[in-house]
Image 1 (tube, rainbow, N blue to C red):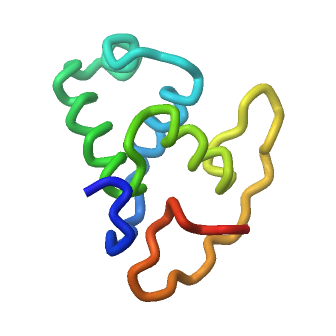
Image 2: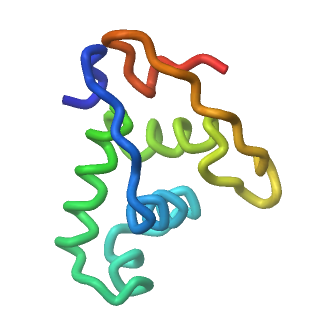
Length: 98
Protein backbone atom coordinates (compact mmCIF):
# COMPACT_ATOMS: atom_id res chain seq x y z
CA UNK A 1 0.00 0.00 0.00
CA UNK A 2 1.39 3.47 -0.84
CA UNK A 3 2.84 5.28 2.15
CA UNK A 4 3.17 2.06 4.14
CA UNK A 5 6.50 2.10 5.99
CA UNK A 6 6.85 -1.67 5.61
CA UNK A 7 6.68 -1.38 1.80
CA UNK A 8 9.65 -3.03 0.09
CA UNK A 9 11.08 -0.86 -2.69
CA UNK A 10 11.12 -2.28 -6.19
CA UNK A 11 13.01 -0.91 -9.18
CA UNK A 12 11.01 0.83 -11.89
CA UNK A 13 11.09 -0.57 -15.42
CA UNK A 14 12.27 1.56 -18.33
CA UNK A 15 8.63 2.06 -19.41
CA UNK A 16 7.64 3.07 -15.88
CA UNK A 17 10.48 5.60 -15.77
CA UNK A 18 9.34 6.97 -19.13
CA UNK A 19 5.86 7.44 -17.67
CA UNK A 20 7.26 9.12 -14.54
CA UNK A 21 9.08 11.60 -16.79
CA UNK A 22 5.86 12.33 -18.69
CA UNK A 23 3.89 12.76 -15.44
CA UNK A 24 6.58 15.18 -14.23
CA UNK A 25 6.24 17.07 -17.52
CA UNK A 26 2.57 17.60 -16.66
CA UNK A 27 0.91 15.23 -19.12
CA UNK A 28 -2.45 13.68 -18.29
CA UNK A 29 -2.90 9.92 -18.48
CA UNK A 30 -4.74 10.36 -21.79
CA UNK A 31 -1.91 12.50 -23.20
CA UNK A 32 0.67 9.94 -22.02
CA UNK A 33 -1.34 7.19 -23.72
CA UNK A 34 -1.41 9.12 -26.99
CA UNK A 35 2.29 9.98 -26.75
CA UNK A 36 3.29 6.35 -26.16
CA UNK A 37 0.64 4.89 -28.49
CA UNK A 38 -0.87 2.75 -25.73
CA UNK A 39 -4.32 2.73 -24.12
CA UNK A 40 -5.24 5.05 -21.26
CA UNK A 41 -6.09 1.96 -19.20
CA UNK A 42 -2.51 0.71 -19.67
CA UNK A 43 -1.22 4.09 -18.47
CA UNK A 44 -3.60 3.94 -15.48
CA UNK A 45 -2.20 0.49 -14.61
CA UNK A 46 1.40 1.67 -14.97
CA UNK A 47 0.73 4.69 -12.74
CA UNK A 48 -0.88 2.48 -10.10
CA UNK A 49 2.13 0.14 -10.14
CA UNK A 50 4.54 3.09 -10.00
CA UNK A 51 2.75 4.60 -6.99
CA UNK A 52 2.94 1.25 -5.21
CA UNK A 53 6.62 0.72 -6.05
CA UNK A 54 7.60 4.22 -4.92
CA UNK A 55 5.32 4.20 -1.86
CA UNK A 56 3.75 7.47 -2.99
CA UNK A 57 0.07 8.33 -2.71
CA UNK A 58 -0.52 10.53 -5.75
CA UNK A 59 1.04 12.18 -8.81
CA UNK A 60 2.36 15.18 -6.87
CA UNK A 61 4.10 12.93 -4.33
CA UNK A 62 5.46 10.83 -7.20
CA UNK A 63 6.98 13.88 -8.92
CA UNK A 64 8.45 15.07 -5.60
CA UNK A 65 9.98 11.59 -5.12
CA UNK A 66 11.36 11.59 -8.67
CA UNK A 67 12.88 15.06 -8.26
CA UNK A 68 14.32 14.23 -4.85
CA UNK A 69 16.10 11.17 -6.20
CA UNK A 70 17.23 12.68 -9.49
CA UNK A 71 14.96 10.42 -11.55
CA UNK A 72 13.71 13.40 -13.57
CA UNK A 73 14.89 16.91 -14.25
CA UNK A 74 12.63 19.80 -15.12
CA UNK A 75 13.87 22.63 -17.33
CA UNK A 76 17.50 21.77 -16.57
CA UNK A 77 16.91 21.88 -12.81
CA UNK A 78 17.76 18.94 -10.56
CA UNK A 79 19.50 17.00 -13.31
CA UNK A 80 22.11 15.30 -11.15
CA UNK A 81 21.34 11.81 -9.98
CA UNK A 82 21.85 10.76 -6.40
CA UNK A 83 22.90 7.26 -5.47
CA UNK A 84 20.05 5.34 -3.92
CA UNK A 85 20.86 4.61 -0.29
CA UNK A 86 20.54 1.14 1.09
CA UNK A 87 17.26 0.85 2.89
CA UNK A 88 16.90 -0.28 6.44
CA UNK A 89 14.37 -2.94 7.30
CA UNK A 90 10.87 -1.55 6.84
CA UNK A 91 11.99 1.72 5.24
CA UNK A 92 10.19 2.87 2.10
CA UNK A 93 11.57 5.02 -0.77
CA UNK A 94 9.35 7.87 0.44
CA UNK A 95 11.40 7.90 3.67
CA UNK A 96 14.81 8.14 1.97
CA UNK A 97 16.73 11.16 3.13
CA UNK A 98 19.71 12.32 1.06
